[in-house]
Length: 262
Image 1 (tube, rainbow, N blue to C red):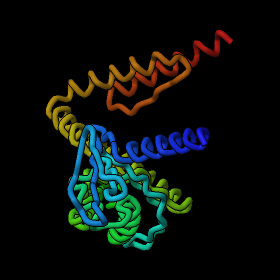
Image 2: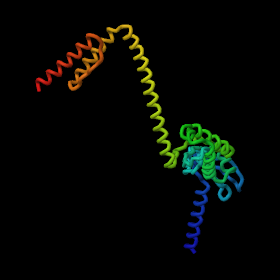
Image 3: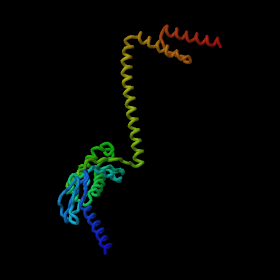
Image 4: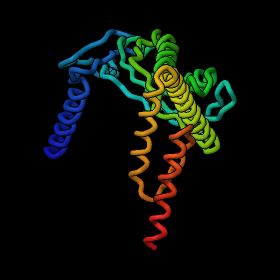
């Protein structure tokens, strides 16, 4: 009889401890506790110590910190019929714990699916060049669409970022060829502009030489000096009058001297 009483007392003590543990909740600083009493919303409690009525109240913990969703890769066809693989990251936080509990069943799962569909819709409406160049603008469009849908749930979408855009191998090769052709085009344009500038300078120089024949002759002699530095070269130029005779005689004398040495 005494043992039965002790066992009953121990059972009641454990039951009371369990009831007391379920009635006392400690809510962290970044959390809020949504309290339902007999299925009806009572309010939001926390942070700190919260006492619930056993078997009557039910507490649902909601995290108010910034939450990140990694959107898996989505196969999307762009507006110009190019198949790409796009993935993104969505950042959001809960602003109203009451609405996020009462208006959506699983807000994290709902936002994840909404982000996937919105990503496919927005990317499908833009061309490939815009997707690669105007990524910041596309991020803001996706964020705005998701935020408009989730705002009645008490959720604020802070940012959306497209992580990567994967292209087919054939498209990568085609873009590489396009970039190479563009660089070759710019190189040829620069070369042509250089030739144009050089031609203009040469035309000015020709006018100066025409007005000053002595300057032309001095330039010719300077050219001889430059060519003479290469000992294996012989330069023959056309001249007039006495100059032609003297230059021809000099060349003939040079050749005769070379033959005698041999």
